[in-house]
Image (cartoon, rainbow, N blue to C red; front, side):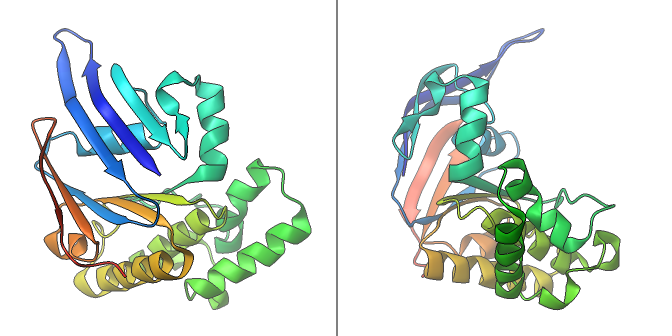
Length: 228
């Protein structure tokens, strides 16, 4: 599913900053992987590269057989629509849209028919336990419910790769556990490849594998026995 070979990312500015250096990794289809490391270790940069939101300064990033480092922004955008979905710490829901409308947004952008959108929205809202909240606005929901809306929006495209950036970071312990349980269920039932950046060791323990970054390099890569 994911192969990175000797990936380096450098940002130019008043002084050159190297965020990642010589990253070589393989993540197999259906793995659930946590990425941890201190602030400035390169976690967010790596997630952005995996999602095609940015391109490396050098090296190859192959996702589902496609080298994103060689694609232009338009082609990467089209690739993301069908192959990659995202969950963000801050939810990124549209405040004036109802739950069902937020979840449906990716399908509207992809030109899916209204009948198919209605069917898929109903399915994923039931899957995340929000079928009774479909007509509510985001500010009428708890933090855990808003994160579940974001997860439903990520599921709606049936993308094989799910990237999660601190998905429990804004939640209390109980709501965070609900989100982790939901992610484990998605992983088990859909065989979705999940890559999760987190500072939380408990969240990481939900995964099968832990990759540790420090100073833009892989410091550790080990099985941890979570996930399925």
